[in-house]
Image (tube, rainbow, N blue to C red; front, side):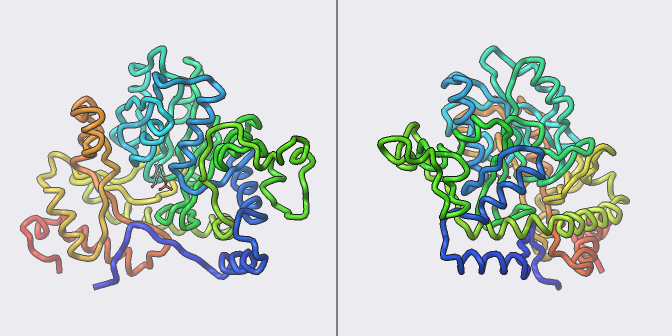
Length: 406
Ligand SMILES: Cc1ncc(COP(=O)(O)O)c(C=O)c1O
C-alpha cells in the first residue's frame, strides 16, 4: 500500500527557503519588503492595481464586506448573494460584517453559483454577489458580471479555491471590485496561513489597509514599511503620528514577513504547480471516463482553465452506489476524502436559517452524493495509478459486491 494520499499538499523548495532565511536575516518579522513584493506581484497577476495581504481568506472576505459597507452605506438589512455550495467562511464573512447572506443554488455540472438562479433572489436590499470559484473551477463570470451590471450590484470574488483559473483567457479575481483569496495550506499557492485582497480602487485599498491594522489612519503603502528607512511625509502631518491615529473600528488581521517570503517563492513557481495539477487531474479523468455512467467527473467548457485545487466526484443517483460505502472503502485504502463543501445542512446553519436545504435541490444533491479526493502537485505517477486502481476496482462489479479489487 502507498503512503496516505491526502487532499492537499504544500511544497516548499530551496527558493521559498532562501526567501524565508533572508527575511529572518533581515531581522524583520512584521510585514516588510517580502509582503510588499508578494502583494504587488499577486495584484499584477490579477490585473488589479493593489494587493493587500492579510492573515486568512476569511479575514479577506470579511474586510471586503466591511470596506464596501462603509463606502456604499450598506446596513444590517443589506442582502449579499452567495452560492449554496461553498466553504462556510464565505457566508460567515457576510454575517461577520453584519449583513445577510442569501443563498443561490448551484449548477449541477460546474458546482458553482448558477447564473439562471440569481435573478429570482434579487430584491431592493441586494447590494452584491459573491461568486465562489469552487474546486478550481471558475464561475460563469461573463453572465454574472452582466447580471451585476443590470442591477447595479458589486462583485466580490472568492478565489480561495481556484488560484489563477481563467475564463476566456482572463484570470478570475479580475472581474470584481474586490477579490478575496486564501493561501492556507490546503490551497494551491500557500503561505501556511494567509489571505490576499486585490482591488483597483485606491479608496477601497486605503480602507482595507486601515481595517486590517486596527483602523489606523495611515494606510498608504510606504507606511507598510517596504523600506524601514523611508519615512512617509504624510505620517507626521498630524498631531498624533498617523500610524497611531485610529479612524474606524478595525481588526488585527496582519500577516508577517515569513508568509510574504513563502508567498513570493510560490508565485514564482505557479507554472510548475499548476502544470502538475492539470496533468494529474487529466490523468484521473482519462482513466475514470469509462465509469462516467456511475460517477460525475470534473468537466469544464472549452473557454475555461480549471486549476484543480481538488478532484470532485459526484456519485450518480441511479448508479446503485452507496456513497458512504464508497468513501469508507477509499479511506480504508489510504485515499483521503472530504465532503464537497456542504453548507446548508451544517448544524450551525440549520440553527440560523432553519431547514432550507430542500429549497436548493442541486446543492442538496451534491451534499448527499459528492465528495472529493486529491490531485495535488505532490502526487507521483505511482500514486495516481494507485488512486485509479482503487477507484476503478470499487466501481467494477467486484467492488460493488464488497470484494477487494485484484
Ligand atoms: C471558498 C473558500 N473561501 C474562504 C476560505 C477561508 O480561507 P481561510 O481558511 O484562509 O480563512 C476557504 C478556505 O478553505 C475557502 O475554501
